[in-house]
Length: 228
Image 1 (tube, one colour):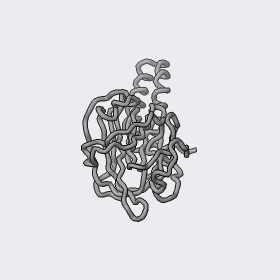
Image 2: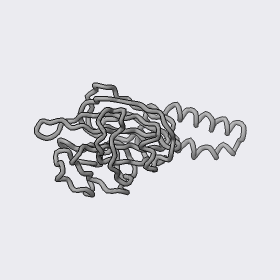
Image 3: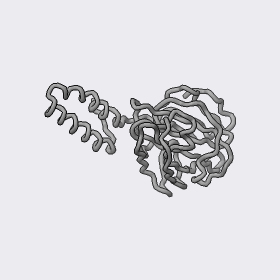
Image 4: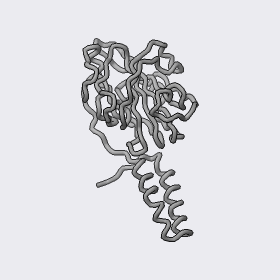
């Protein structure tokens, strides 16, 4: 069984493996103490394939992890999407989750903004407002030929110190396509358009590229709390 590793992981894996080798050289058998840490580093940067569901208007999870309590809040002001409060789905990634991020929907990248900040525990609600983040405004096709705007935000956490985003403004993206990674523990926020209800529940474990967060074609008919 082949273990695929994200390209961002190789420098970190090289450092961990090199330090582990030095430990063997200078500490002999005590080098085995570092082996589990090196193995964990390799496992952290795994990049498995995912089966993204087909269907118009689906918003899928951009990250593996646990759904935190829902919030109603304006999207990041730097995106220029207005100050109307929207439903925010936050996904917390612990250090054992896959950290490769995937596009939540088909569409066009309208804006990208990076904002430096603090490094509170990513499971705290205040992390969405105060932590370092990379926010993306994506415009996606909606019902009746209309377009719908949503935001997806990569947020650094207590341990994470690097956000990698491969998106560029004007880029056409596909649902489930890889677009970045955060190391080593963090969260992603998805701001749904008005009238769109979540299809997940608080506390649910979601899978990047597979779990459906919302159905833009269903509009207000979607039932909050319905799991995919």
